Length: 588
Image (spheres, rainbow, N blue to C red):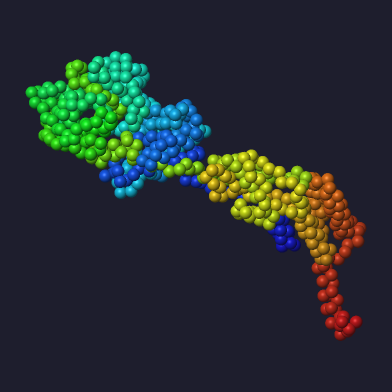
């Protein structure tokens, strides 16, 4: 008896398991929740040796990088200067974010200048970065900032004074992008005056007739270099040649400190000074054009100083440099220490002074390639791998199946495919019932009572289809009902055959359950007769089985012998006949 009950439970549970839902979710390798990105590639042929903590200029426009790539789609997505911080730049893994300083964001003209701190740049292979941009994101204040924002200062590392020569906060000052905030003071308002840069957003136009200059207060002691290594890089264009022009100074001739200047031969000089003494390293090449910007600078390491022009080492007369005794004067851009002599006549668009480090030849070369927008290449726009829809659910309304879901992450549209024997596992494996931007569908005129339908749903965006899908099935309740009725009917036949009282009781319970189950089902009007027909049949069988139970258990009622009782009686009769020598039952 117990075996039959266990078998019944197994069959019922197997039938019910057919209506379970199994959603399938995948996890793409992407900076979480960002929709679009573009890959940036640093050309390894411009990297002579591996670099660390390298500040790279990322220029965004309709013609950017060494291949003049059109990346204006970034502005198409973000639409406004106010959304400029809805970006992120990551390392090659697409996940680890880099610090970003926004020099300028100009949505109207679709141009932006970003400085990015790249932790490591390889020399033997290209280095990839990813720029993410998504208008739905909150401002990325953790890694992205404007000039003078604390987070943006992380870009410059060893930078002791960095300026992009923008009037900020007004036309009498310029900002220092380093963590020292050594902002410079102009001689007066618009002296020098802000101008457009060549490869960067801004420049200051120095007029030697005034003369114009910018002064950095003496209390900014991080520029008091004496014995330590230090370096300078700047980008400028001169309007006059063959005159001595002081580019940057923090000292005086044969007194103290150091300075960097162009002499009357238009060659570059770096000089260190002590009382009644000084040492000068001179370049070989000269600044020979008034229409060209030059990237120039020097690196001092102990007694040696090397000058670089456009990323190439250029030393004609070296010197053995002695440490300045002091270097504590105010620093000045574009003028001699006395603020009258050797003024600069031209434009300067970048100046960086780096303390405690003698920048390598590879750094100078890569920086020139970067600031001239010849280091990077941009790939096409990429889209996040979309995830399948979530909360995918089906319901029945008459002969119609209604589906609803939550749009998958990064999805633009949803595609739903119907199958009748199993879940579709591809977009062509069944009948397409929906392909649009909404979150619901109605599949009409189906035989939902007698057929089970299987639905699979994929997400889609401009990057393609989701790798996995959500799924659900519904329908076939009529077949399920018929199956359970057949099962209970089999149990009824067995009960009558074996005359088992417990099976009679199981039959009563089974038929009574099916009667109530059917009475509470919702069938389409045109199929309502089917529900009532099956309900009447089940109720009739309930009564039949109840009569059998009464015959067995009601006091005074006729009690039918059970199967076991009939077997025992038969065996007893056979045994009696055999003992008396009578004929066998077969002969009778």
